[in-house]
Length: 484
Image (cartoon, rainbow, N blue to C red; front, side, top):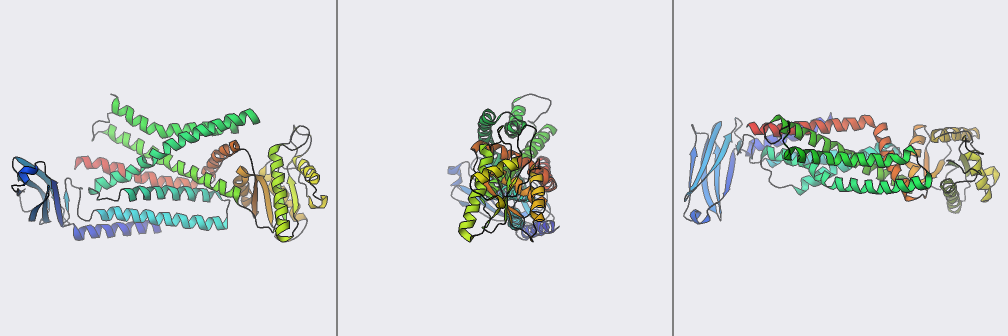
């Protein structure tokens, strides 16, 4: 409701300013014949009744300037004659006394106030989004809302950047609408190469991943998603180009035809959706990386080591050993900084193709590295990350103590997802990420994007609905200008 009130207030202020100054307008016409203009010019009005009046006119270099004022409501034409050249400007005088030129909703004095109001409103939305992001990160660092707020903030800032680049005299309401719709084109111009680059990188990464780790549905997910996303980004451009060059039943060549309107609606709405998804992907990448590099304070009581598949002989895979090593490094760091020992909680059950549970395998490795057995608390029944945390917490709380400080160790690309699951279970834990090969990151970005869209679907749908409603209204308004 507050956003609506602010938008209405800014709109009313802009309209009030236009009414205040819009009764006068200076027409500027560039000369087609400079030599003839040197001999002077004649300015006349063609109108059925006194609609406007000419205050004065003058020649400034190669341009003729005509200062006019509104008298009554109606239509008038201003004719400028010099030599054999005649130029005409259509002028509309509205009931409010505001003058518009060229079209009924054309340029007017003070028209930039509307564009400025829009920029101020987007600045407010950006500030609100940044404020929510900062607050939410402090309250719940691993929340997928943070990804969403990052994406929305970047989306709004891109609109501001485009507006700043085009903060020039906007020619009428129609011109302003076209500039706003042009934001889609501006952003997608950079989005398409970025998405194609990501597609190539993810494709190469997944091929390497499948060669080294084996084929799975998760390995194929990244490639399929990026190809689909890039194809969708290119589709609006392809569709528009195809319809412009082809003779189909959808006639886009008539500016006032339904085919043109349909094409504009499809292209602008699809581009808006894909642009938004691109920024959510960027937000996902930012939060995944931030989660991986974040470190707990050296005051932890327990560190849960999240398990994953062990080798056939029961030894740790490089991925799982990396998680255990990350936990050991943090324990050493904490001991050095504060002198406080930490209890290791290796977590993971026994799969059907494993000879030992993941928790026991990790515990054996920790002992080999010199960790005392009384500093190890093994959880060996869990089958997924959610159970890792839930069953590990049971073991921790069974030892007594109030409000234990918990860290967890996992692969760096997996910290955000794990932290989110822990948060949902009410566990205030901070992750320690282990280094992993680059190709694991690529699928993680795609998986976290899908997870974000799923877990925060109401927020995404709400924002997208508002965005698409605005886009549809702007396209319909732009289309209606043809008939004025």
